[in-house]
Length: 508
Image 1: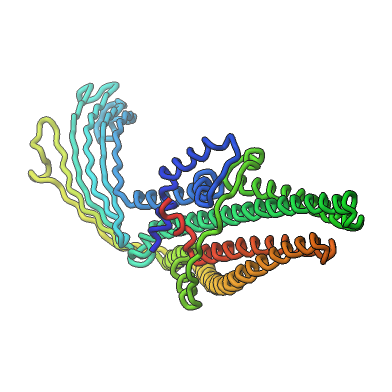
Image 2: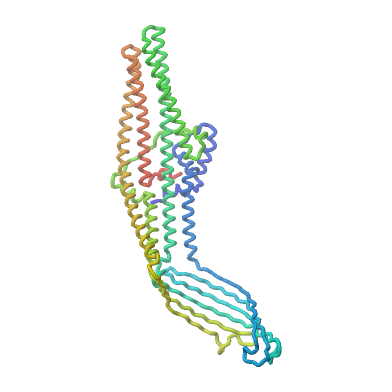
């Protein structure tokens, strides 16, 4: 279900979009004409907010890899050497040596290697082996019945062992042992959903800025056309008043005042167009000076049929990336509750260790002690109880409260998005009606303005009626253009709310 939207996102790491971006940059020296799709494509590579969301998702994915790697077995190996000396007296060993003393010298070299692993149910296993070699020497001073120097060694030793510890309460079970990995996976899912949400929000912002620029450019065109008509009306009025003598001076003043008002509106429309271009450029990662050359082309897209109320509710629940992120957060909270409850239990472990070893030297067979290796087995239980209430019970209660709060926030957001989608659907239907009505009004107003101009030539109407008709025509045309933009914006926002806005750009 998420594949079309994520394809646009992940390919935004994003090789296919670079071709559109490079092609756009080569035209940036002149006035830059963009389609809506090209604007969204450029924002995909240049928008810093979207780039930050992509990096957050990368961090979360690395967190999953880290937690999975944390469950790999560990190898520990060591090599150590030791030299030690101790002083003593011959009397210490029960000999009459007339006060002779001795010095014991020991040299040893040992190594150890072990592999440890914790299973998914918490069993801690360790398999290891150790070897060593030692040399012992006793040096006598004074009169001693023993040789001056007594050397023992080299003496060799080897041991292999297997140990196991199984928690029965705290630390036992898959839910506890796999909790860090599951929390990391939930965090990654949340980051992916928020990345998708950020991409959808970026696309929505770009589309709104783009069509606002489109409207501002059309508004400039309407005012420029009105200025041209107003200048012609002023010239005609002057001709009739000053040359032909068929007009009144008041008509010249009426049309001149109207022309000045139109010039003021045109100045404000041009400033608004520049402001809208700068805002779009900001979303595309452009400097304000470069963004002023942006131009919007085409007409608002075909919007298609609108889903019914029940279908909209289902789409919000199933496809909204915002709700998907919140669901992932809920999964993390549930896992934290499980871990906190487990930590609030006593620690009661079973443990066991089995070992086999041998000792030999250059003058002995491989194993000493009856011609076979030595064996050892150790086992038992271990209990740990806090003396007092501790912090675990409070942590568990806090984790449960956080989960309850997260579930409440999720339900509130579900209701808010459902209501938002329903409201946008109502707005969209109203916007469609406004487009139809404003189109009819604009057509009628244009025809009325033309008729009033013709009547003025015939002398059957006043300049005031012409000015009013021209103004009504301009306002009707601007309302129609604004209605088109409002309809497109409402549809884009509805698709953003239901999680389907990026479907428009799945092929990019």
